[in-house]
Image (tube, rainbow, N blue to C red):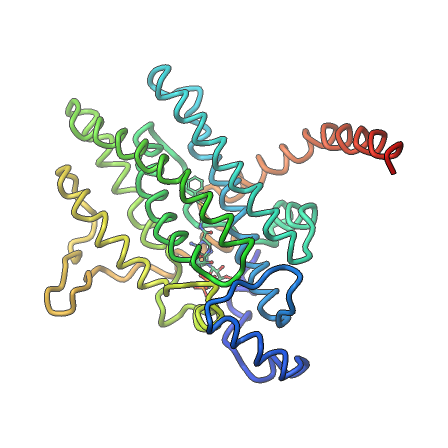
Length: 330
Ligand code: BYC
């Protein structure tokens, strides 16, 4: 469905990319970025910077809203009232993150309606990880701990980036994600130190989620399409492989401390390089999943489409009410 974009969209910076840009404005823009200034919506920016930001922020917003679905399926089945309350709060936060990010993306000129339409028409991507099912309660625990941990690694780095509205949204999101991570960690620890069946359940969930988590940081730097351009413009503050390494460094020891087994026999800290060695993730599988062919892609988009259709009357009512209210003041 989105396959061509992945293969054909070569985001690497080329001179032709700037052929129609004013060279003086471009130089000033790049000097501002190099000096660590924030770019704001009203500022001049190259078309390619705007396009890349829209692509990335929009995908991020979609990831938050679709990301609410796998865990959301556990709200009605959460083990106990307190877990249910915490999970409901987390899922609401994720939807709130999408709102913040859609707003940040709107500052670049793409309407929320267009973004939502592109999502439900299968034209926009969202994170690979949300195309897998949360099979047991332990899956929701692993998502809340490790996917949120991965997201924090990415977002803390990028919140120091160049585009003001995205950075400010990321700062707020990270504060909430830190609570999610603690909630997820508490759930995993509870299961890992529980009965043999609970232990087995969380081990199986970790085994299921490890390959998607390794994919989560994006394709290896050797094959990443956009990293070079995005890092030059400080939209991305670390490469995909660097973020993956940072995650492994922070979380592998914690997972091992719980006596859980990570399903990668090659995973070990290489004392010579100071980096983690691991089995190269299967990038063919990744490509399939992000291009519409993962286990849950169709289901995720169907739910989003249904929500859009069922909520249409609410949006109409709010908008028409707004019109009535605004008219006398105008
Ligand atoms: N999944 O050149 P590359 C959350 C695509 S939600 C899908 O390296 P880039 C949570 C990429 O778009 C937080 N697609 O790309 C929510 C590109 O395709 P196009 C999610 C991926 O942009 C609820 C192609 O592969 N976080 O935490 O330089 C509950 C080539 O890749 C993925 C974000 O969205 C992927 N994982 O770097 C719980 C962070 N990776 O567009 C938790 C924001 C790559 O050319 N995004 N692709 O067709 C980013 O930081 C960057 O976009 C990435 C990829 C690091 C992910």
